[in-house]
Amino acid sequence: MANHDNVFSINALRQQMTSVKVPPPDHLQSGDGGGTFDGMEARVKALETLSDRIDGKLDALIKDVAEIKGRVNAMPTTITLFGFVLAVLVLAGIAKFFVH
Image 1 (cartoon, one colour):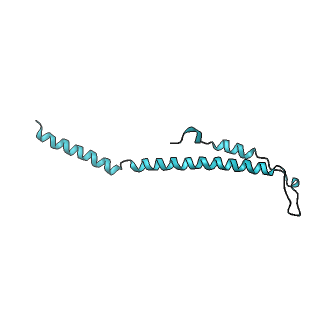
Image 2: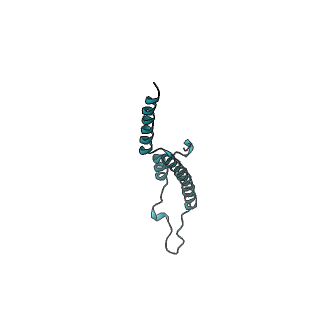
Image 3: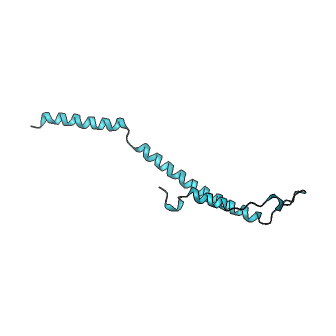
């Protein structure tokens, strides 16, 4: 299973996303294709970093789900368990005739 470092909180992600401030449209230059915002580079870098963290957490989650799926597939089915119980009962019945 995942260690606690990889566990993420939806509320924490929401809080991080709402803390990103989007400038009003009038702060951007317009017209000649030079529409830039001075802080845009830092904001994009912060979003890329956050995206990388989310990717890492999703990778860990995918590994955990695969491990759980493998464990579930390794569990005996109901028919297997029923067959085992039936075999034990049959052996107990046979042993009853041989042991006095």
